[in-house]
Image 1: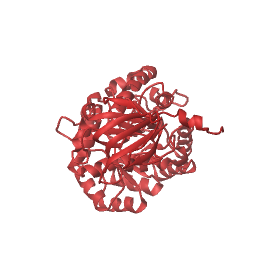
Image 2: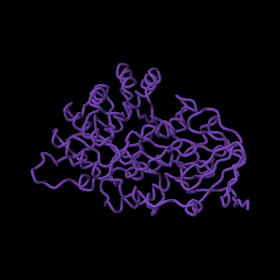
Image 3: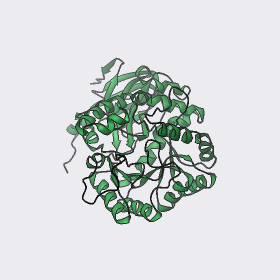
Image 4: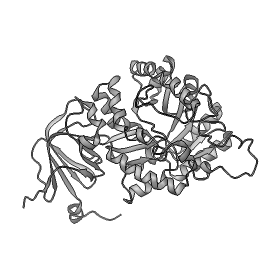
Length: 438
């Protein structure tokens, strides 16, 4: 490695935010009348006193709130922008172009990081990281690991029984899902996903809404298969996130070693206690039925499953709060572009159960703690979800105080006046100037 010289340091772009009130992602009380200097892709200095930085672009915050970029802990980069029928029938190249466009829209909603919960998102991640397209940081799960007739089995009705030597169906060939049955096969498929560059593993652990061949009460995989998937992830020093709803499926997968439970609409009291004891995360989604923001499905089977799931949300929130289960916020937007555009509105919906501070902390600092469970598989080493010296510079300047009015995040076009990711500004509707103190 080369030695960093003073000239190299001087070449790093600098941005100085002045006159801002900081929500740091951790503390409920804002740091008032502060200065924040960003150098390169890091937060260099935070001070209540004036900061001098030659050549810095200066943004006068005008007493607005500077906060960390938002993190969605359950996002589907490849599946959020079209109906399911179009997603499943589209050429992968065409799908990727649409996903690239959608990623830019996600970033402009203020979500600077997403934990992708399954699909071949690697090309979008790489193009984003190399600056070819705009989008959030992506922590990729890669292909779902699913059993036959599991939540990831989207084959046509007559594609079983499977014939030995039959080519994989399209969803498997392009790497959105890998169907695996039996211990040797799940070990191999899990290793293949990690080889592709996954930061964590997504396993289908129980019946789902959009899949048609697995009722909600089904526990997916036997315990030995569950253990095999979790043990492979552990050998790679990362973790398994599970799609699961029923209490029985969740308990078995926790005993097998899973660390992140997605959805979990039917968690019971003893399982909530177990999750708290083992430090297992509940990644929740504030879904609804009967209003303009309810998920809509092309199939009545999925519509009925969805209503059954959402009916359990209130009880689970009460239990997880009672036992202080680690809780993350995600949206799980699937197959509906209108809902994807409301990503921030779904965060604002959290006010029904949590204070604005609790919800915002969840969508920044807390979500960052969850996604960093991937350890050395972390594609973005450095602190996320906080406004702190030395942290990665993912920042939002909000016109108002979201700690008092969380509805501000529901309208990012109007209320997010500056959006920065990795030290680069992607949106700025304020005047700026260059500081020169020589």
